[in-house]
Length: 139
Image 1 (cartoon, rainbow, N blue to C red):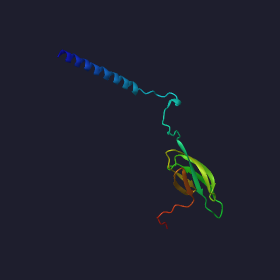
Image 2: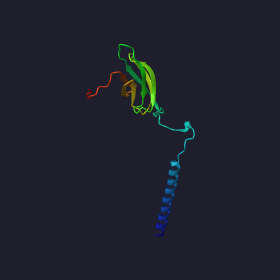
Image 3: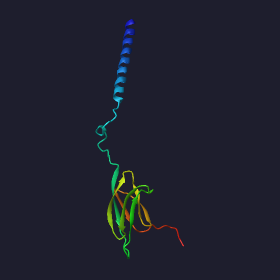
């Protein structure tokens, strides 16, 4: 009977000591090193570091009897950020490269009294000078 007690105690001590080793190893693995230099930052291969994207804005011109020039402003929808401003001829059709923050999927284009929110789809957006029609009847 004494042999069984001694074996049981030895077996119990073995389990406790093994568990302590496992806990110490787990704690060592959980220690994370804070990067102090940019090169030390580890990311997946597909991670995109860019915070901006290029969008191609296609502008469809509109024929006029006399040339019309005005300021074309490209801003955030709320108008707080200006992405591009230029003096533009309404008859001209062109493609403009606009650099936007990566998270932005729409922006506002203003040309005189014409104001439109333009959606970005697959890196492209379209704008024309046709006024937006509403269902309201004004007299």
